[in-house]
Amino acid sequence: MESYKVTVTKDYIVFASAHFITFAGHRCEGLHGHNYRATVTVEGALDPDAWFVFDFVVLKKIMKQLCDEIDHVVLLPTESQRVKVTVEDETVKVAVDGKARYVFPRKDCALLPIPNTTVEMLAKLLSERLKAEIDRLGATRVSAIEMEVEENFGQSAIYRVTFA
Ligand SMILES: [Zn+2]
Image (cartoon, rainbow, N blue to C red; front, side, top):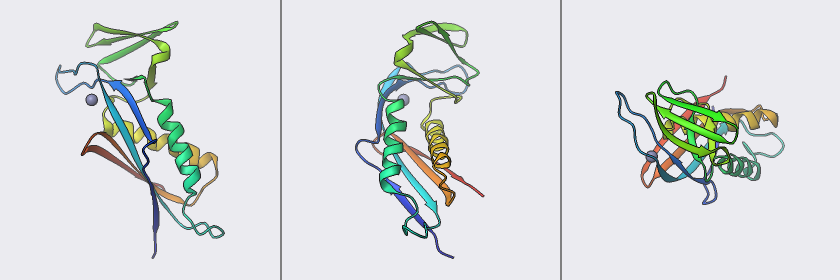
């Protein structure tokens, strides 16, 4: 049995964003930023005509787009039990553990359907968004996606998902 995978990491597949995470108990970070960088690996059978797993040009374009969507914004979780995000007109209000903490302009926020803005959850979210694009393109030979998100030099999380 053979398998192939392609990997893309580029200096433009990055996003510079603000976030804070909550920890177990009542600990919560203050707002700060990272220069995040994504590396994606796509596994699957070869396209019988092109002899590749997935077109690099297309993969780079999708990843750039996905990173641009969350670049230069405040990343906020909408599925947190402790971080409550409320949108009122052009304003986003953020409370943590019932206490008001931040108010941001709506245009400066990315509201993400994750429980905490850890690199693990960002990697999972990017992977799901990539899969949606791959499905839209009808690339049925993709059998696995591995997404690494680095928030600092030598500090990253990897999410991997396989498809039947
Ligand atoms: Zn951080």
